[in-house]
Image (cartoon, rainbow, N blue to C red; front, side, top):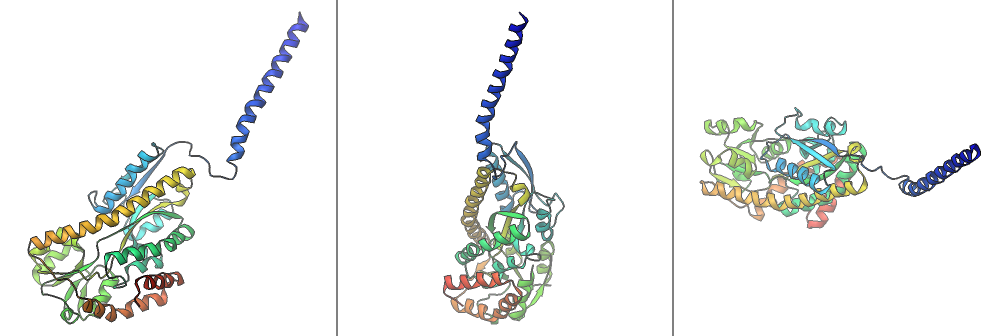
Length: 351
């Protein structure tokens, strides 16, 4: 009886051992198939996304749309909570470093502010390099691979999408349709490029915060403003100004990035899903912002602002008189920036 029990135990152990080998064999192929590849995301990731803009701003709306679609199209694997209005306390010029260091996983940022740390970003907002919205889009497309490389290799982050802002126009008390008309203007500017343009055309730049613009116009401290149609509507410019010259001084971009360490936690399929969402939203934003720009211009016109479309001669004048601004920037820019400009000029057939 004891021998029977002992043999039964031995048989049971052998069976269990063989079963474990079969199970291990079934799993082994799967594991070896993942060797060297990124690990699968074990559970949903939860990220914070930062925006300095109010929740109803077009760029913050785009960020929220990205978050919503990411959750839906990854079946809840990626969950992003958008913090708007600068609630996290970060200012624009800090954001490239904040994402790099993982202080915030995802953020959007004005690319010209990030250019303080990564000079190549400044190429998209060189004054009068592009003359219209389509050219600005072409420049963005040419620059994108260079920006991707800089972000990944130098700043530990991945670009999800790049979204345009409406181009910067000139808003004035008097009609402006030549460089001579820009002489002696007292112009509110918001960045270095705008100030350089005003000085090149014989005016005086005033780097005022937007909160002070209306009162400065009302009191005559300034008589002109460089800004977009969206801001003109926000500021009710028709109450203090008369003319709008859509001379496309600069067109800048909003950059949406994710910390590369966080991005690499995702499996390849989820990564590709996020990048595809970003690609689709970016295309939508180029169409959307063009429509918004036109709608905001019409609101200004309906309230008394006269739009004076610039002639080709006027645009040639502006490009010529600001040539040194672009050339001086390129002298100190990375070689890649010069490549971008050369490729763009070849595309549009203009020096």
